[in-house]
Image (cartoon, rainbow over all chains, first blue to last red; front, side, top):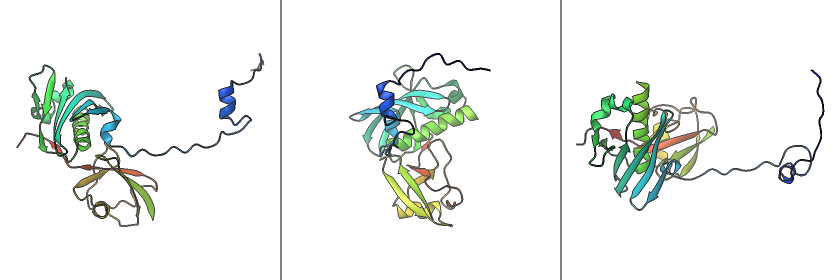
Length: 130
Length: 76
């Protein structure tokens, strides 16, 4: 198939700058790694409270965490998925007085909020995969 | 020797460590004073056993997650 050149124009200034003003590769950028706790990926903190969501490949599920001390936190989930309701651990999710919210009982408490979030995300994933 | 990174989930702190053939998960955790922690390739991946050797399982530059053990279950 033949190619027809319709027109030629200069790249926008921003693109020219990215290319160093000429042809070829732009200079390599160094992207520094982030030293940040896992909860910061999907949660925000305000005092003792964390609001965010448990992240899984099957969806994100709204949650709330109250951290009394670094080793003593209560985990909640809003409107857990049906898959979780059929899971062996469903009895560990106790309805809260606020409609739609469930408190998650921990047989073994995590050492920090991030580890608790990871644990709950693993249970959610297991519920979808089993 | 391979260099890998261990990210502590709770703090975000990153430890760069060099491992050699035969280095176990337990060796790494003990060296980093993280004996109460578990290692996994990521938050969605299964945990390694403490006796697992890491050298053959990982490529240089890989990152592992360290998180504390926890279990959803009936409150004691």
